[in-house]
Image 1: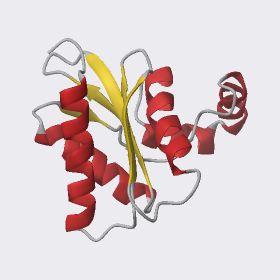
Image 2: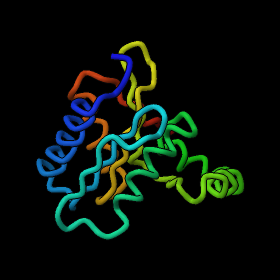
Image 3: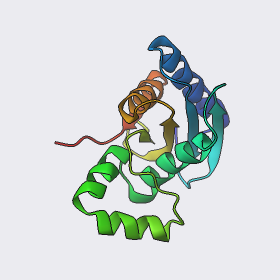
Image 4: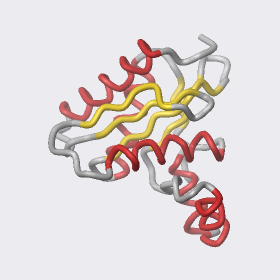
Length: 146
C-alpha cells in the first residue's frame, strides 16, 4: 500500500471506536489524515465535547509535521517548551503535544498518514489508535519515551 485510501481510513477509524467501546473509554473523536496532512476521515462519538475534532486533527497533524508520534512531541514540550511553543506558533496553534497522535506506516516503514484520537486520557487515546492501525496490518508509530 502506497497511499491511505478512504476505505482503509474508515476501517481504522471504526476499529478505534470499537476498541474504545471494548475498554469503556469516554466518547472518542478519531481523525485520520493522509501523508500530506489532509483529512480523510473524521468520526465524533455522541457525547464528545465541542473541540474534540480540532484536537484529534491537531494530534495527527503534529505527528506528520514533526515526523514522530505525539507522545514524543509531548516529551519534547516538557524538555524544550520554547521550541515546541515556537513550532506551535508556526503551525497556527494546530499542534497538540499529548499522546494520541500516531503515524501510520506501511510494512516498509513509509509514512502513509496519521491518526489522532481524543476524548479519554491521552494514554487511552493512544492505545485505541495503535490497536486500530495494527488491526489493518499497518505499523503504528506512536513513539515511546525511553
